[in-house]
Image (cartoon, rainbow, N blue to C red):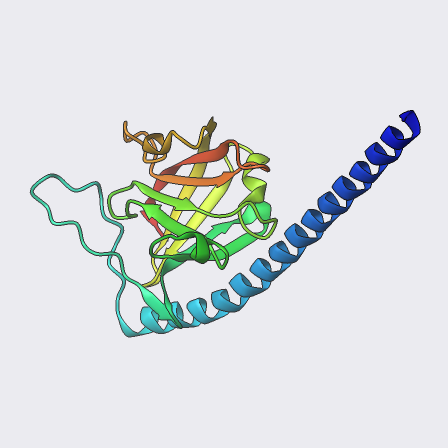
Length: 208
């Protein structure tokens, strides 16, 4: 009886190890696929932004509008079936990625997405998967590091990382900064998806 139990436990262990190995292989494969896909899209978005910048004079960075002002729509470029508002760059992580205009789980498999807000109103929120080629490095990034966002019309906004916090999945209302203390928020899930890594940034009040 004891021998049968030991054999059963060994078999269960082998099955679990196989499942874990399969999951690891899948995750690595997904990370690699996402990196290649976002790199391919990035080249096309950069080309479109360059053409936009050559054709029109980009509007200057705008201050927070008052209630009487009309907030302009963010400029976009279209690539295949997706619409992009610009490019996010985090030099310390070696990350340069296109940002889609809205989000869905399928879109997150390609590139980061706008979750809420706008660069015009200094409340832009961008989300991405924790792929190594996307936002996984947010959990290690240092305070004071630079972040750049280049719009679809070629204006570059400069931000500085100011805070990192951990939020639960049911704290979606806190992803959009309710107090208006930060001008840009980046977030991704920690491994396992139980919590989220949230990075808050202040904008350097000049557009390049």
